Each structure stands twice: as C-alpha cells, then as structure tokens.
Length: 130
Image 1 (cartoon, rainbow, N blue to C red):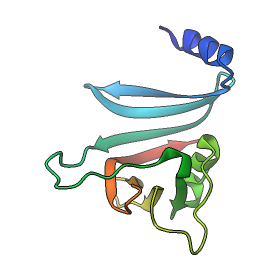
Image 2 (cartoon, helix red, strand yellow):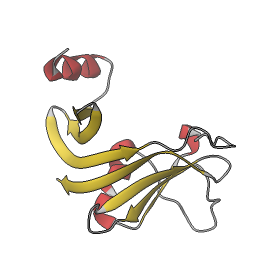
Image 3 (cartoon, rainbow, N blue to C red):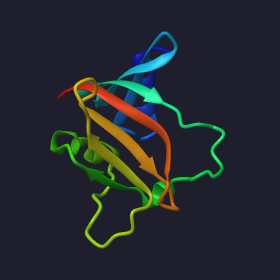
C-alpha cells in the first residue's frame, strides 16, 4: 500500500491526521506526522524496548493518557495526538513524558502506566522539524 493509498483510506475512515513510520535496518528511524497529506511535523528516532523479564508489567490506559513535557517545542505532539497536558495535583500515571535529552538525543519519550511505573517503549528523539 502506498502513502497515497493510506491517505485515501484514512480520509474515507474520517481521519485527517496520520503518522508514517519509516524504518532503517528493520527499526523505526523517522516518524512523519501528516495532516491532509502535508507533513506537519517530523522526528528522527531510535526506540528501546524494556526488558521483557521484568517482574511486573504496566499498561497505559489510553483514554486517560496525559502529556508532561520538559521540551516546549515537542508539546506539539500532544496537540497532534489530542493528549491533554498533565495538571498540577494529577496522579503520575497514564503519562506520555517528554524529557530533555543529552548530546546524542535531544529528547526522550517515556510512558508510565496506570500503576505509575515506567513501561515501554522508550523513544529517543535525535532531531525534529516542523
């Protein structure tokens, strides 16, 4: 299926936004967020999967997901996905957290489940463009 076919199908289903994940050597490498066929935001990424031998599993309740960001330029991700920001006094659970990165990765995205524990995946953002 081509990108054009994906755009047509998503439009038929009533969606005007899509995320296209490109890969390099079998791993996610870039995510392009498109609205009505135009790229509105693009991030270069690598992804880490948590240890599957962990003694506990945490699940995110997507209907309760909130955004906490230390990187204001990436707040746009919350707008794209229609995820409300975490407000003061809210429990630290069901979170998409965007933290400042280091020299290698400009930001790190982590997820916290309904029990407040970190879950996967961990997304390392190398670069972004809008």
